[in-house]
Image (tube, rainbow, N blue to C red; front, side, top):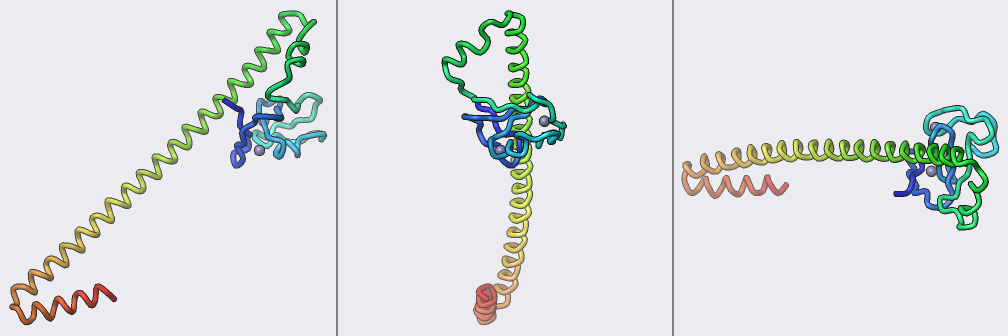
Length: 162
Ligand SMILES: [Zn+2]
Ligand SMILES: [Zn+2]
């Protein structure tokens, strides 16, 4: 899974560079532009004030091998684990957000389908009523005798056409 930009109208897949915030949100380059190099800006997702150094950082989602090999080297194991734990809980929170978003859009789709079903049913009822009306007209015409029958059919079909 890739992280997605947390701006709901964007949701760009964050495959290269991404920006992450202390309040556990992730943004694409475009939506992080407002965050970079500024004091006391608000997170676009949750409005947390981000002012301190390291409140917003730019990450590479796929860091180079030499960076991976060295970045944690020399740190005590408990610090390495602490960093890994924080990074993992950030990731878990993002997965949680994505699941919420997905279940919300499934709910919206289901509601749209239900609405269509209701519209369809009412359309079928209208058609059935229209058919009943035209059938009863036909029966009325038929019992009147052949001359009028032809006259009515002409009248009805020319009305239907207009
Ligand atoms: Zn974005
Ligand atoms: Zn935030």
